[in-house]
Amino acid sequence: VVLVIGSTGRNFAAGMSGGIAYVLDEIGDFSKRCNMTMVKLETVTKAAIKLTGLEAVMQDMLADDEMRIKTLITNHLQYTDSSRAKKILDNWDEYLPKFVKVMPVDYRRALMQMREEG
Image (cartoon, rainbow, N blue to C red; front, top):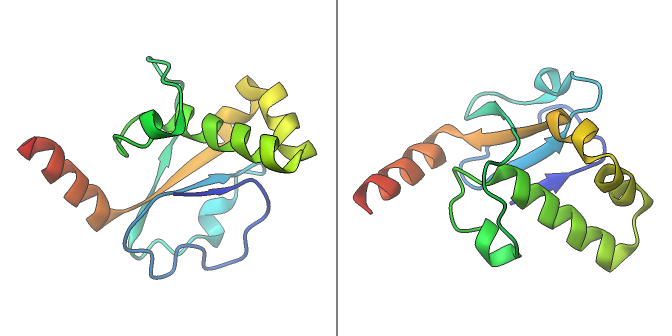
């Protein structure tokens, strides 16, 4: 899992075949800089269930996006005292809809298959 709360260059996700990236897209133009060959962009929505702890939010990579992002930013703030992380957490309802989930198509398919097989 990669979380980007800064700027990104062009061709983001080129060759990305696995894993997930969350990108803070404050301007709303991330799709123009993302290489869409192997990935799809998904919106991040408010979680219905509130999980806590890094281990809990890493269980199902197809769900729990809000809590995963919030946990990662909280940890980042704790370890680095980042003013940017603090601003995002202090204004969570404003920032959450600005996150984009970058999901490789084949990785999503594999996760769905694993979920179905139980």
